[in-house]
Length: 344
Image 1 (cartoon, rainbow, N blue to C red):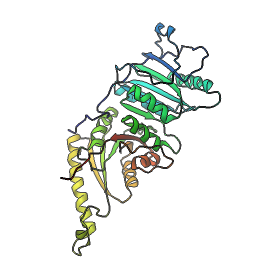
Image 2 (image 1 turned 30 degrees about the vertical axis):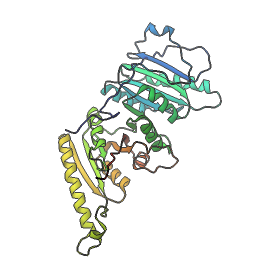
Image 3 (image 1 turned 45 degrees about the vertical axis):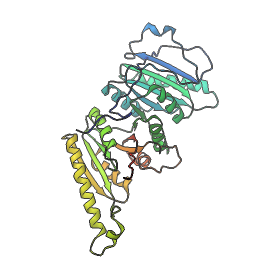
Image 4 (image 1 turned 90 degrees about the vertical axis):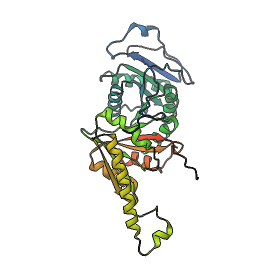
């Protein structure tokens, strides 16, 4: 079997929080930077313990108790999409985790009123759903990325779920994943009986994306497809080899692709009977991966993102960012550290 443990990955299941939430609680008017409400159990089981709990006002990260794993859902102001919320709740339940819902409110006019309105909006949506054992809601002023990173560093979630925002979903997902070192799922409409398509460049012989994505596929009870895109032209051949009249560059590229396919098939067989391997040859990596995802009726497309390369930008440059932007399915961004190979 593939290794399933890694630093701060889905398989590692780091520490989280045990949260509580009480929809009946009311706070007195106050100046605030952050609102936090929590409760344990289902929403219909509010306890009297919350009578003395107050909304907190703080500009610093709170030290959260580490008891249970946490799935963190991040939402923009004024948007509480059922798709992202339902997916986060489903994953929290299947991963035996609590749910931390984080709302960001931009600074500006009537910020305190908008902060409370966002909190009420989140609570009303949760009242309509069957929720995990523990839920906590945090509404904080600031940009979505800043709020997600600030709360995420205190909560240490095992998985972050977010709704695809307009034109910046790729940069936001990779920036949060890069800062927290945690997988980020950009949630779109689920596909019944869909596959989990896992893209790998196969440069790192530890295969971190494959190993860290497998537990999610198991939690979703989805079959998996490992996909690698080999270049249509040979980029690995030495210059002299590529220019020899009796050696075709295309033939060399095909040999390289066949070798990658054989290795990927071995990894798929070790991972389980419900895993297949696909190697495609294209000079357009993003298009090749999306084509496989569409052909396999993908529910989730998983792609790796090297730690240290995540920056919130106006334009998406990295493969993982472009896949988030252009894919019609949910995309899981998996952070990993590149293995440094030293010359002997």
